[in-house]
Length: 404
Image (cartoon, rainbow, N blue to C red; front, side, top):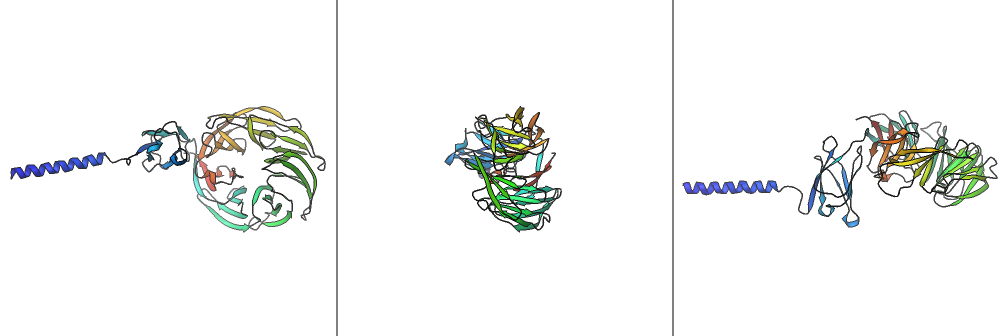
């Protein structure tokens, strides 16, 4: 009897030992490894994406509720990027089974709701958008929800939109330019259509003339006179510009593209006889945009990852004599400056992230919040989708910028 008890006890001990061994071995499946992502305050970060590799050895894995991600074995030793909304992206030179820390941005975006298109009017409590396919949408919103209250169909293939008072102008891919009244925003009414040929994008208005350009290929800029009955006539063509962006300052047309028209300035005091007065060639700067009477030049980057770059500030108060007034630092590729203290950009160390920055054109801008989710799904013509701080449209979603 004693012998049987000893044998039985030995079997129990072996069983317990075996169970303990299996428990110790619970972890990543064979050929994989585990990493953990924590915030700089030591909190687990759920939903952080770890991405890297090329082609068949590419990987993209998200952390679970414990901040843990299981990575394929071939990711070991590879470089990677760790990113998540409201955190600064973190580059890793060589992945290993360890803990990685990512840092909160100074402020955070809180998701409110989905929208369609980009903003053409962004008022307190009311938002109007259009989309490429001719959708017109009116929303009511607050800091808790967004509700579509009206919609309409307008001509499709919308490119650039400009709102002048209650009048919406927009170019189309190959169907000219349309003009709508938004006096009653719930019921937009077409005023007239300008049958301007060609593939259109950017345009500029001045009194009874409109200038159109080609944003894809170098081409002549064309000047049309028009009336509110929709009659238009080409009165001049000039230049040889890829017209990424255009605007008037006084009687001068400012044209911005890449490298060699930063900017190009033409005198259109007599619209039938335009002539060039200035052309800026900036090999160290990629592109630019207008902010009031300033041109902001965005630098080229020889490396993919940078912490700080410097934009050039050009004063166009006298368009015939643009003056460089200095440089200012930024940690994002600027898309637009919204006001004296707020800008929108793409974060330099991860160009897929849209950032909101705080600062100014004198002392520079620093990123205060980041969205990394699905920002590549935005229309390539409308990276800046509209805002009325603290509300921002990013990735076809409405967000509110808040303190933590």
